[in-house]
Amino acid sequence: MSVLIDQQSTQHQPLPVRLARRIDRLQPSPIREILKVIDQPEMISFAGGLPSSDSFPQLSVEGFDHQQLQYGATEGDLALRKYIAEDLGRRSLHVSADQVLILSGSQQGIDLVAKLMVEQGTRVAVESPSYLAALQVFSLFGAEYLSYTPDTITDLQRRSPALTYAIPTFQNPTGHCYSAAQRSQLAQVCDANGSVLFEDDPYRELCFGDCNRQPVCSLLERTSWIYQSSFSKVLAPGLRLGYLVCSPDLYPTLSWLKQAADLHSNRLSQHIVLQQLLEPGAVQRLQRVNQRYKIKRDAFALSLQQYFSDIACWQVPDGGLFFWLTLSTDKKIDTRQLLQQALQHNVAFMPGEPFFPAGSQSASCFRLNFSHATPEQADRGLCVLSQLIREVI
Ligand SMILES: Cc1ncc(COP(=O)(O)O)c(C=O)c1O
Image 1 (cartoon, helix red, strand yellow):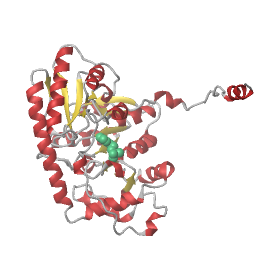
Image 2 (tube, helix red, strand yellow):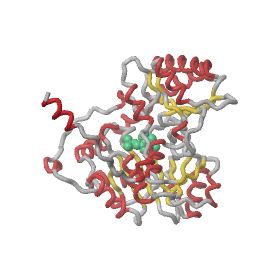
Image 3 (cartoon, rainbow, N blue to C red):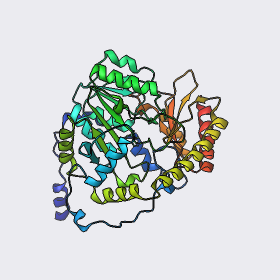
Image 4 (cartoon, rainbow, N blue to C red):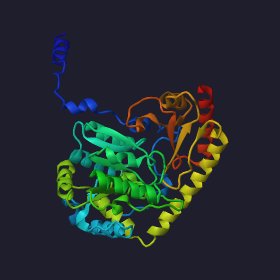
């Protein structure tokens, strides 16, 4: 009996914790929540931006110097930074290795840039729709959004955001690739209104069409800029490696923010990534990955045509990992509710609402990843999804 009383007396109510006020603005990422349920073997998932696991390279850790187990430079290992600078030069973005900051995944770049630029009330221009995990970070720091689409870039001219975030190449979620005219419009507008351009470019290598992929940052003349990309989609997301390059005025502060965040990125991952990039067969490997993705995209487009042609519209993407569907209904549909029904039928997709900066009203849009499921699974899943949608509309 006395033991029982002792136990009860140790079960205190926790004292209230005074969290930072910005935590009120923190939302869980819907995609990470969905990823928790899609691991079930019978689930057909169109939800994540997952590269196909058969695209992962065979990794071996050769030539890893024992000394690289030591703490490393915040900026990243020099050989990798030099490789990235040369590679970007071939894409018309001329930078030196001193402008390259290796990241622990390009998601870290979004976090660092938000810390650098965004506080409560900072005006941030974002595409509508935009990458939801970028919205999650900008919102945490208190961003006020100015939204635009590739067709309304010039509206930003008179609105002076402090930061303009764009994914011009195979955008997440729409898959849209900016035309040459849209690229130069975006550069001109940022130069004119003085907003810092933050170009996020993780999908540029997953290309199956003939499209302009010139970094918009390479077209800027005056304003400061940050350009980032990732090794997640072309090598493997588990390596957690990306990088940013930026105009020299922003580099020192961004590298101090990186110091404060994690000291430096994983050196084993940096070694593996450089080894992969220098492999004699690296270009051919990427070509094979893109051929496989193109086959999946084409099969997906055929299934969409079969099941959705009278209830939705979409563009076939020239690269990236996603189709973006807009339902052709008069009434707006909340696709988050649709997801709950789809999950009961073992189909997962990404509802459209969280991609919109304006908030959570019904969007009638949703994102479908085509790289993860096999064409047979995709066909089955799309058939189920279209039936559910027909019942709703
Ligand atoms: C537009 C965009 N930016 C950044 C990221 C983050 O990628 P990672 O942190 O894996 O490099 C993603 C991931 O899907 C993305 O779609």
